[in-house]
Every structure is written in C-alpha cells, then in structure tokens.
Image (cartoon, rainbow, N blue to C red; front, side, top):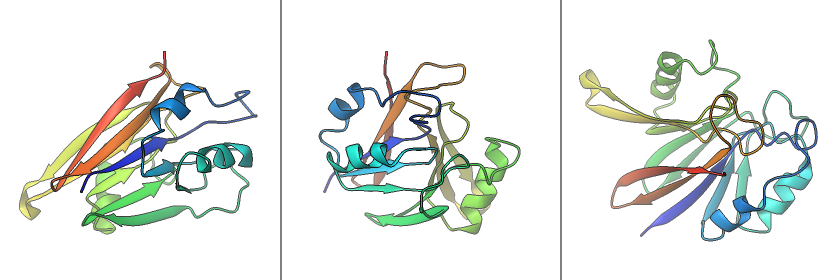
Length: 167
C-alpha cells in the first residue's frame, strides 16, 4: 500500500508571513497525512491544512499553540520521529540528529527550524541501519534556498522523499 505524506515547517503566519502560499494546497491535495514541524504561529494554518487532510503538528520555538514537542509515528513499519529541531544543538547538526534518532530508535527524523531543506540518509555500519533525516525548508521565509515543502511516499518498504520548490 502506498502512503503519501505532505511535510511542511516554519510557516510563521502572521509573525513573518501574511499567509501560506496557495500552491501548497495543490501539492498536498493527494496526501494521506500532513506533518507540520512547527513554527506554525497561527492556528489558522492548521485549520487550512486540516481541510485538505488529516494533520499532525509539533510545537516550534515560536509557537504558543498547545502541541507536543515531539511525535513518533509508526507508518508501514517505519518509526518516524517529528520534531521542530530547536532541541538539536548546534542548529541543524547532522551528528546530533543521528544520535537523537538512534536514542529514539527512529528510521526517519523529520524536523524544521533551520528553514533549510535537507534529505540525507545516514548508514550506521555497526548496526546495519539506515536513518533518513528530512527537513522541508520553509514555504514562506527560507534561508539560502527558495521556498519549499516536501512530499514523502512510503511504499514497498521504502521511504522516498521529494523536495518541492514553490517558485
């Protein structure tokens, strides 16, 4: 069975952006689940996303919403961790994300906070284990790169992420 996740982070509506780009709703029209990695900053963003599909979200360092700091989902046998990323120091440090993932027994860690997209697979030879680190960037206030979101397809015992540019 194929499952499609829509992944978004760091929308910052209304503190840094007026609204979420409409293109997101087109890209997420076929997803089974939307994951928001925090810094939502306005409940209206979650309401709009929930109109498209079931949505889960974590609280970012700029959020005052009553949301968990971390979530672990088991999807098709994969343990997928969701955090904002502000608990990783230094910011966006791949080694610290690897250690966090190992500590939580994750197959994939999805985070935000850096506003910089990331798709990185790490192989731990001693454990014969792969960990996938994902960050969708930001659809409203990117750092360095252009505005972006991500879709993740889970099928045939594989996790296939795709970064989507919102030009």
